[in-house]
Amino acid sequence: MEDLNGDYFALLVDEFFDVSCKDQMAIVLRYVDKKRFVVQAFTGLIHDKDTSALSLKKTIVNVFAQHSLSLSYVRGQCYDGASNMQVSKKCVQVGELVLLVSNILNVLGASFKRMDELRQSQKDNFQKALDMDEIKIGRGMNQELGLIRADDTRLVSHYKAFQNFILLFDSIIDVLDILVEDANTLDERAKASGYLRSFQTYEVAFMLHLMKDSLGITYDLNISLHKKEQDIANAMILVEVAKKRLQKLRDDGLETLINKISMFYIKHDILIPNFDEPYANSGRSRRKIVDHTILHNFPVEVFYKIIDWQLQELNDHFNEVTSDLFHGVACLNPVNSFSSSSEKGKMVW
Image: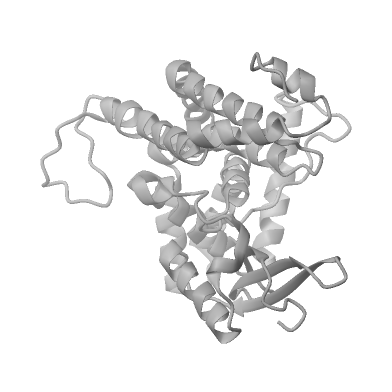
């Protein structure tokens, strides 16, 4: 604080889990010291489970108050992961999927024996697919996959978790089957049986593939924007490309998705529902009146809504005003300034 000397600073905040799986929040102050060097001062705090914006703001304000810092002196802010999975709070089916994936991870990751069983099943299923010429072999292909924990807010962990659950579907079923038979306690057997029943449904297969495909677009954008050599002008182009990809998925991707899922549930012997029956969410009473069918529910109530929410979130973060501002800032870059300005039909002096 003495080195900062009441001057302006930038604020960076991120959340993470420590080795004991406690939720931590890192607060970093970035400033220029008296010798004109850029300095980053770090503090790590144990944070509660409430990761809402208000809770995070309260924690930050408290830290500032303890060190006599003022928010009015903040000249830059960066928050990682706070709104990457807002869709899960808007769509009950996504929330249910995240909870199911997390519960299965907790069960399978509870012992080294279960993880060894998962690896062995993965090897057996790989050899079986190889014998049936279902996969190709080559350098860098078919590497061993692990289970990724789908953290509450982080886009990368959700995308990889859903992707690996699709690829490891048979192996996960195998280990849950073993648990139903050989678990040490009745409670473990009951949990494994319930997860096994829920996991082998059309709804889970649909949601896994939908979230993998839709999050894959924003995942690619996220990776590109984090590259050190990225500039503002190119970043805004990447944002527009991501928006167009999501829109194309919404306009033309439903049939492809359904065909992909159809092949998946045939391959894995998943029970095919009667699509003309009224849709009944597993979390609600069947006595409730339902005004649409299963066939209507997944495309209209899930597919389109989830993609619309993702598009809306991108538009909220990168609206027309923000985009124009970023383009204006990019024109101040002396490198290729003429080419940048010529795209707008203006000369930069």
